[in-house]
Length: 219
Image (cartoon, rainbow, N blue to C red; front, side):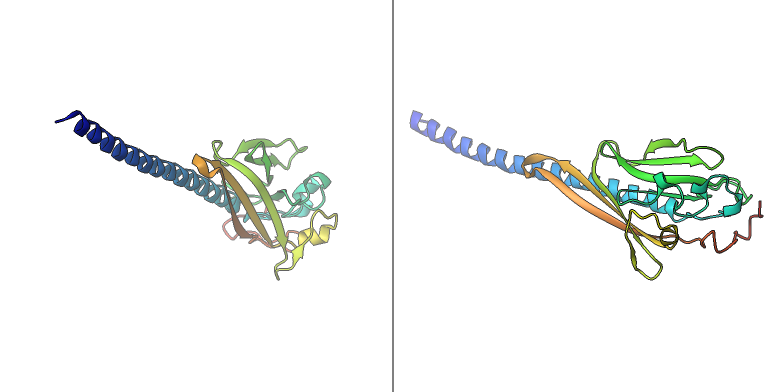
């Protein structure tokens, strides 16, 4: 082979390898972006499901006259000014984490808000002052950019918050939770996705009904 043939061969090989590098790099970046978006989706799905499962139990076994704290007398906190529903947080009361068959002995107040890019769950007993125990319920490695709540009556009419109207708060039957997650990978920059879930509160209003499940007994 002549020197010219060797140089031509090296040039062709360089072009082929360069093309392969570009293709492999693009495929790798695409895979990383897809992985980031999949992680975002899974985080949002799991977090929304976690919140929905608990918020649906708001009002369970709440008997207003038996609750020593006003925050525990309604399914959505209506009488405690610091815990009333807001666009960025919500607090509800009920036997949400019920673990036995005695009605009303495990009533708590539970709420969700955003803190430092993480969805935080706060819960506290109704037997004393509001001293909540906090825990992160979203994936700590995924940034949550926004957590928003919208409130509706049973007929779909929106409830504007914040409000001090206790009766308006008591009429809330549906809560829409929207969660926005962010991820950044590759040259696409920041990827933002918003997910939402409609949650219907399934228990009767505590101030209009003393309903309790048949398998439990009135405290």
